[in-house]
Picture 1: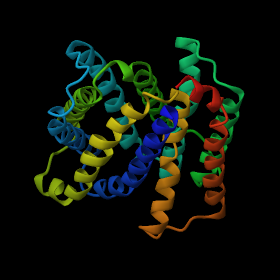
Picture 2 (picture 1 turned 180 degrees about the vertical axis):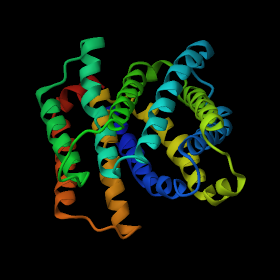
Picture 3 (picture 1 turned 90 degrees about the vertical axis):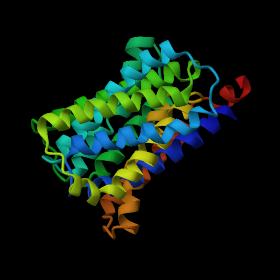
Picture 4 (picture 1 turned 120 degrees about the vertical axis):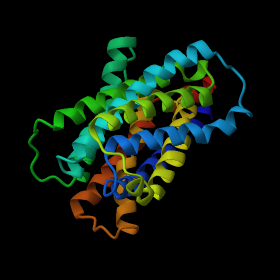
Length: 290
């Protein structure tokens, strides 16, 4: 039951992140990526402050501070690389390359912790990569220089998922989230001050997008990720969270009236098949342990 609980939480996380693409696209019309990320991460931190009064168990400030700085650096670097690269490559290719974190997670976990994924997980990753490729809408695929920024972005997202999976049970999830948001927000604002012009009017125009991504996509979703990964293997977690690309495509169809091609529909189907395959990884054994 604990594993199922974690997976449901992570599915809800991917739902929030998938819908966030609509607001991120809107914000890009008004403000730069570093300003946007700085504001949304700091707003995410502020949104968690009331929860600290209700969640005071397992507070190890020194450990949370150490982990929070590392996680904040990971999501800060990854998010800003992603936003920067989107301006120079197609959204489809950006989504595909970013979601390669689900391939990197089991590889890195094996190299660091010797965690060998099951055959079902390996097959599901293979199917998911094909699904993502279809979903990205690219008929030809050649890597350009800026695309390597997205591959590095995927690496840092993978590291964040692995670290959360390793230590999520040992620390206070709200405090850890709060620290990582502050670090990511300050890092992003520092980049904004160096490379962008911060305009109050432009920020006001993007206020709805900042509010959604700050409170829900950041404050709620990243915290749910930490809670959900307490009960879920990092590789399975990365597969579940990669469904954000499917949800983004479906949301674009219903909300923005963007047409889904037959190729993209097959991509969605393959992604769902991959997640179902990943659940064949000895669930009965895990449930008996719980």
